[in-house]
Image 1: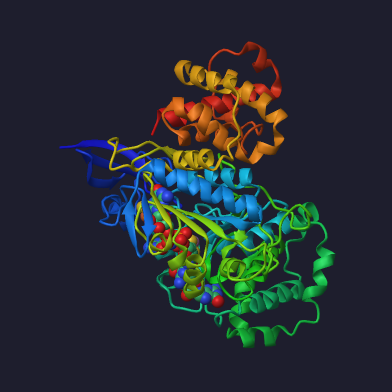
Image 2: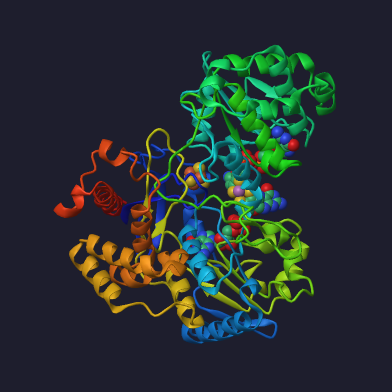
Length: 591
Ligand SMILES: Nc1nc2c(c(=O)[nH]1)N[C@H]1C(S)=C(S)[C@@H](COP(=O)(O)OP(=O)(O)OC[C@H]3O[C@@H](n4cnc5c(=O)[nH]c(N)nc54)[C@H](O)[C@@H]3O)O[C@H]1N2
Ligand SMILES: Nc1nc2c(c(=O)[nH]1)N[C@H]1C(S)=C(S)[C@@H](COP(=O)(O)OP(=O)(O)OC[C@H]3O[C@@H](n4cnc5c(=O)[nH]c(N)nc54)[C@H](O)[C@@H]3O)O[C@H]1N2
Ligand code: SF4
Ligand SMILES: [Mo]
């Protein structure tokens, strides 16, 4: 009999609560955690098979170096020193555009990227490529344009909407909304509520749906244009909502005038009568939509999202309870990027800009395989397997193979790792602290940090955040940090009172603005080592800068400030910091 420990599933963004029975460093059994405020006892097959993720025969235990056509085990010291020297040389000679980072989409390895981006910023590089970039770029960009914020995007208020729509999504199989199977089954079973699937294919979700709209593949934007034109022509739009919340509709209206609606539907492969009925439902019922790969990865992916958001606005369901809501997060996932800001880099060959700080990785091969002196010559890959998962994998393999330096941080020997010059073994989220930046609960906000459930050291695996700090030191890009920060960090960890450290950190940050993006790394170094984990310290920092700050939520949730800071608690902004600190403590205390 082992000990049952609580954690979360690492396998998709929903991060369902799990309980693991662990004995002698091994996961014996896994079951869903009924006490999880996120998933309430739900989990899918992937969660239950976490044992095989933990014990995969391809797991990495030691740093490896490519020598000729094979790998040799090397010490951490050697790997770091050699990577550090080579990376430094490349940046010194060719400048910051010569280096990029690829990584991180799923809930595994999330925290690594916070540190990885820290090193990129210390090197002066803006190149952060991410598979999520491909899926979400069009959506994030559209949300930025229409609602003013790229980070917060619409999701269905799935418990309360009358019509739950899956557009280009096979959620019954892929998850992507909490407790997907239960929710889809329950919603389609009742007579009050309905499930709609918009999918060219009779997917598992479409089979469960009350209404299945089957456009021709890639025709969504044309179909949406016809739908919006039809709604405006009939005058079915929600005028009260529009009068109250919407501006500049007149700038948009002409796009939908003089549209041959019948032709839009005919080319899209859908029947006029069906679409008329669908549009009537959309304008008389409260609906929420979950969009996914069918729109995001499809043809006209940005236009798809843009038009669907306009539809949600015209129907009066955008940002409305019972319609499409924006789940709040305790952790900031990024900042809106203004692509017109001249300080924001465009890629050299493909002239692409980032959205939410993320460049589309589909351009990576073009940015490596060229003769321009500003081309990318060195890549760090962490928690991602681009040689397999990116578009045009042949071009990606060719590009990664031709780099001057490729460093791969992973838990496993992947297709990408096999191409690398150095492979560094990471602990996963069951062996180390791990943050979860994806949070889809509504209206509750559930923050979570995974605690290691396997506490023994296996091989020479290291926490991802720690690897990045050591890389930053080895390259010489981590600035010398003042003693007072280390001292304050040590004291904070020892006494549990982190506010004095926070004040010192603010003072340091205020005079070192150029290190702003590297602050997580600085916290990992000066506080993390005393808290036993760089990631744990960064989760604390993430709470201190949480987007829920100053919205009154912590007060409503009854989170009292931690410790005694009478002077601070009188200052409105600082009282909130004390509550945020307390919220972190709650998360830290309750795995
Ligand atoms: N088991 C498992 N689960 C996963 C993952 C995994 O790897 N394995 N990955 C996770 C991740 S990262 C993601 S992003 C999600 C993806 O989750 P989903 O987006 O639900 O994944 P897909 O199965 O690709 O479903 C896309 C649907 O879009 C439809 N489609 C294709 N073309 C079009 C089109 O032109 N228009 C419309 N309207 N629909 C179209 C397809 O028929 C398909 O049913 O899954 C997550 N869950
Ligand atoms: N043909 C095709 N291509 C696709 C898609 C598709 O539907 N079809 N879907 C696309 C989508 S939606 C996505 S999201 C991407 C996903 O593409 P990627 O982001 O490349 O995701 P994975 O292939 O799952 O790679 C995740 C890597 O993280 C490693 N890993 C796991 N746990 C940890 C950890 O704790 N720490 C570290 N450092 N590493 C860890 C795994 O070993 C694995 O190598 O693929 C995209 N590519
Ligand atoms: S739905 Fe996602 S988080 Fe939940 S158990 Fe399945 S894979 Fe894990
Ligand atoms: Mo994805």
